[in-house]
Image 1 (cartoon, rainbow, N blue to C red):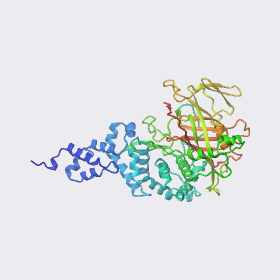
Image 2: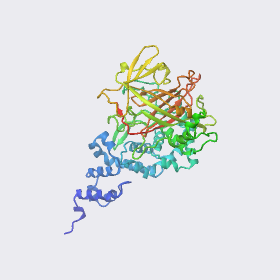
Image 3: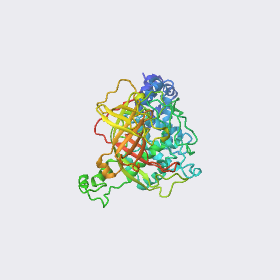
Length: 553
């Protein structure tokens, strides 16, 4: 006896709809929509109210689900999966339609950015965004809207939440392969657009918390930043956390990404892409040994080859995604502010780093109303660092912080700090004898932390090996400190013989999730107290084996 379609049990209809969607893992579940339109019976049986588990299963087929489950729990994710799936595909439709001025564009960009943050090894979220053509949408958006409002700001880009998200997503979805296909003229044009954000440190900050602020341990209560202007009176470029729709109708506080960090990564990647391998005619020594024997300083052929092939900004290796500053996506409590820089992980910096720095020719000049002439000119130089981390557990035995009036000039460390390596680690003391303290040295695979005891301070020592100093110049010694609550790294490069501090550099930056150490680079300021243009740096870790890191809880 024939059975009417309206007599099919609801659970059977739901299985049919589920199996129908299996053939199209990317894009919206069109097969489910078609089933909903078949008849009233199908519509009722397959509605979110009556088939919540079906929508949860389909959502898990099409998107990465571990991140939301981690933060909200399985029950909440199941409840809100139908609404969240609609939100995501509406956002994807905005990108596909190339609606640069859509009223919901900011929400759509937040959805995309959180999808990248919550991406796991299956990369379902990223595949959906790439299928929607989001990278080309972002490219078009930045060319048409990045300078929107600049005419009322002396020609400078005015950053907002939407533009910051667009710049950040441009990096998170970039790759070496895609970048290599970009036409040189297009590449140069994008660099021109990003250049002010990269070098004008006085207008575009990389710091969520004032760089001069320092505290021991992982807890810190920063001052509330202004939402109107920064300290110099310019429009703000780093925004305080705000409440957004995170999953379905569930709201969470989130912090918009730092546009300057991502713009710097994009700028380095494009600069490296445009760089043509060429041995200058004055370079005649093939090897460093040959150059040393002939008494010649400067790069040899081998140095230039290594710089070209290895000193590059690292894209995240599949299946990893670079979400910029290591964030709180997976490393902290589900209640923490989303996209907030995470606590520093001991072991992150230890090892060898290689990359480059770039100075605009006007670096060190005081700021002006407009970018100076020759703003497209900068020089790039190889940077090699070997870093060690030293840590302590007790704030009372920690090295005192520098005079706050000095800001980060000395990496929050006393000006006359001296070191002696011991069997147990590193001894720190000052020339006046006011303090002397012992820190343990982190060793990959050998350091055992003391149970749940919290680390309160991490000091950095390091060097640039003689062969790299001979090739590229620069100061050989490194001393620095880490701000544990957000991972801000401040390093000073100096030479003990340089009493005038002419070679001294101060590097301030963050380690991104693709293991780039990126940030701003300044030389000692001249007598002009006003804001200045600064250089930038991007270093990648030279991995020689598996590494371990420890999170401060």
